[in-house]
Length: 176
Image (tube, rainbow, N blue to C red; front, side, top):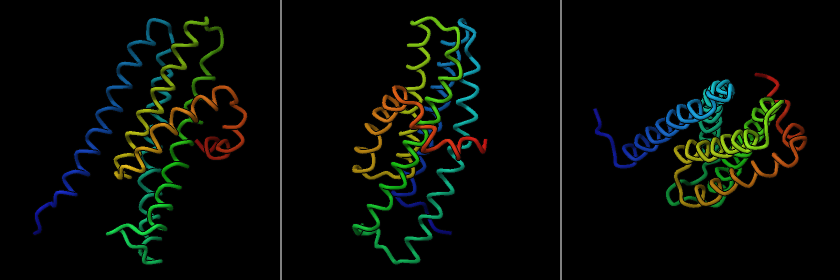
């Protein structure tokens, strides 16, 4: 039986951090939204996070198979290895932002301006939490440097133009 390496321990801690931040965010957002009758948004986001974990895990596993099939070097990382990881992680990250905007827009009906701002803040922060989840799978500095800001910028773009999010990711989001 082999002992866990330092990289295995780092991955484990990244996954624990991602799971903990997800649960903390969901709990705090439910507490914040509950007095306004919008706690169902937190439940909707929780369901989305479960699907996101599954999709992120499966897509990363498939990409790992592709890396082995084409013998992309991971140590030191070759350019194709880095670019495919960056492309997949960014695509998934932007997909979460589209989901979050569409989820929030479903709860905006009859909301005051301040409640709408609060709902969008919850969606905006959910995109940041999703970037922590993506960072657990793609731990390189480049991935975190790109995906964190991309999560926030894509949420703003889709909040201004939700039809774009539905056009790009709606087919997938309609599956659930």
